[in-house]
Image 1 (cartoon, rainbow, N blue to C red):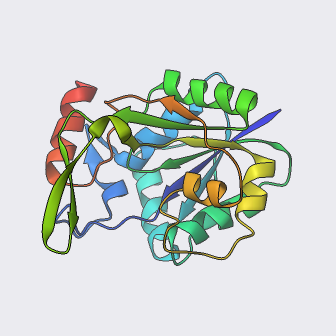
Image 2: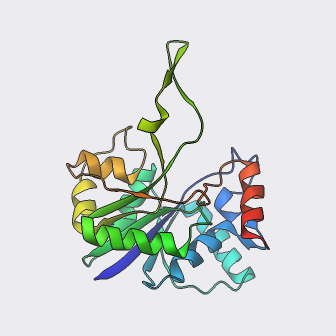
Image 3: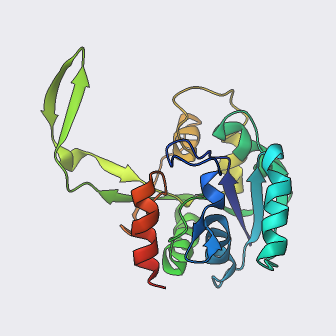
Length: 221
């Protein structure tokens, strides 16, 4: 069975307070996106990598690849209006049956072990979605008031979210809805049960400047 990885790299630098898209920011001597692609390339599955990138960023990325002598093989696909459309564009590039991991470009600390576990669980159960429990108290805000909720009933979802191609193709035939915040929500809307698998706390999403400092410390070089 073939293995694929769709890396979604359409983020901006607004919350990072940067003019550079956050996937291109330098993390320990290498652009974030290169760390992310390397994580998948160095697993035992060596998936075919599909990089979904906005057309206005592709020349800049090509320059970075030359500057850093980045030669990991991948296919580049143009992104869409929303993340939903970007993933669908990436999915259209997959012609064979297999297992597809969909991952945020700005989660560069994803481990080889987690990636491989997601592929294995998806092969067994049809899909695999990583999560971590929250250690913070949670409150629900509604109409300018708030109330405590049971944090044991909530988890935080990560990527790579991994699916067999049959599920993804059926799910992405749907029209876009605002509730489609990730791939699991799209696949669930198509009638498939989502299988949660424990993720990793170090698999953080680089969103704010402090996240970059934490990631640098965790990489340790």
